[in-house]
Image (cartoon, rainbow, N blue to C red; front, side, top):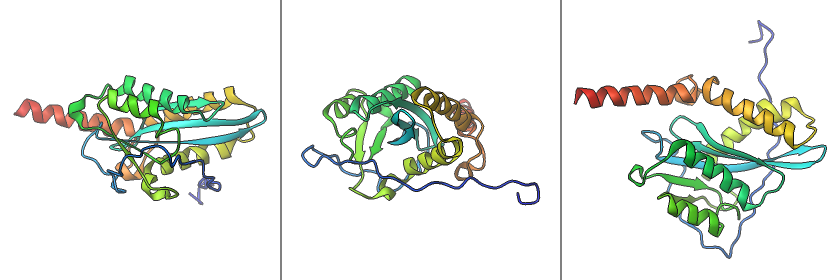
Length: 211
């Protein structure tokens, strides 16, 4: 990289956004920092971050399928109310259409948005089992933290300052599409998430036909 004049993007400092609601019932941690799964729709991880702009803070939520690190749902909002993380979940449900037989687990931190009654009820309606990490421990949701770290380094810090909501939303749309279809990820064999899932689906079809 040095020989051809390239250098890696340096990530900015992490700022915590999790505000725990100690009065709300909280699911157990069913992941225990093990983010390796055998196929898509086994484990989704969710988290959100914030972006400073000239017109105030903008919040960005992601839902990620752990198998190939593919972003299956996202939402940009002017507020951090529970409704906006629920919108990201709805996008993921529409895109993936999981069935109860998948045994899908949804993992998040203990933020009030993710343990809210509406969010918990929506997971139950979709047949998804909730899982929540411990308070103040980023390792318990390390996969989501990693993807958000890449987003902040590759888009937000690199292209700052931001004028406002519309610019951030459009940049996020572009980045998610590029991330899913083009970005090479070392953890899945230096291929993009979409290609990793396509390979899995092709192999599953070949096995089913052989059987």
